Image (tube, rainbow, N blue to C red; front, side, top):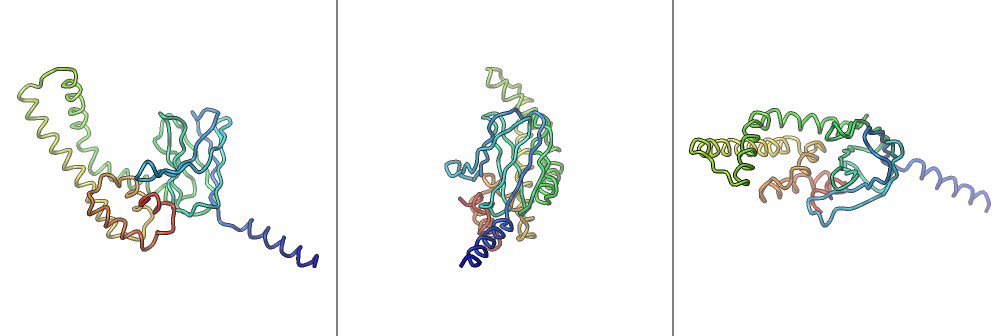
Length: 229
């Protein structure tokens, strides 16, 4: 009887040791000591989930979960003015590093999803946003002037019309580029990560199409739940 009990305990111990999990060890410059909320954000704010509260000491933190099936987008909430995303594509141990004051998203070492996600985003911006960035800044500046009671000249009104049209076209082409990439790569967690982040920008037809495509491969993952809460 004792042998059976020992074997049972040993089996449970081995199962616990071999259980797949996500482990993060963070070391971020500019991250102050205190608490850090780990959230799973969705496309409906009321459904976002706070899954843990962890401590930050000397800019370092650790997080582990056996309950999340990647791919997943973890949002580390520092304060109302500061949060950052950590993208995880598969189970494993990862290092999260960088300077919180200089980067939008920290580096996640040894994870292809994080690296490829950021590379794809950079390509999107280079192709569609950067060419109209000066126009966007000009429109923003003029809108501030209008808000402050100033009137645009007739030339500025014509320019505003043309710039807005160009900006709208750039974002439309950007969205269609994502849709075409999803259709060509329906099994890619990278493009699903892009869609989850950009979901609100799609029209209803494309939203339904994206959900249908990813349901076939990723329906049991955390990122799919975040896409379709």
